[in-house]
Image (cartoon, rainbow, N blue to C red; front, side, top):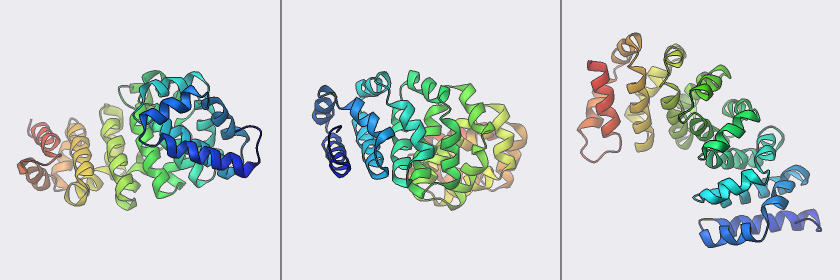
Length: 270
């Protein structure tokens, strides 16, 4: 990965990406061979295509692998991934956002990503990224907000709420799923509830109840349940026509949105 032509470096990173894909033995072998540091170095020194391949390899190394999430952080891979959100090509930005999404499953990594100012470039990807990058950035922001009130405030202050609502209205199916998950998390604190309502989030979430994927419906129902904890928002949710689709989702015996739909109905009725 060091002493080779650029094309060879990109090919090697691509090979490691394929070896690590859904392959715990491959993930362990790559880590044991000491490949994390050279891959992280390629994020900084490689050509654009090489950076994208290295980011994809690091992504596949951490998916479903808690130990590698720790190892990547300890070996310095997170700072160049954050940098790539702003400096990489479209593929590199997508892979970096996806890698950070997975890395943020570790609470120490969440703190580090925030300290490295990773929230702002993720929000920018919501606005200007490809549909795939938008989906990964929204997922990363949702994970960064997990059990972290300060991050929920910072994400909102960085302008994420109108961008997330826009994705609910015009994004890809995958992006709608992750954007609704991010809004569900953001809506757990009072200061964000009014902002979500003011930027049109209630109508967008209600529309998702009717036409979204199962995951998007689940997240939308959860978000509306959180928003309904605010009296003014509860009235606006009813006025937006949420009751009928919530009842339908709650009545579906095997639907994944059943539980959050029931929770939303209970909050609205209280």
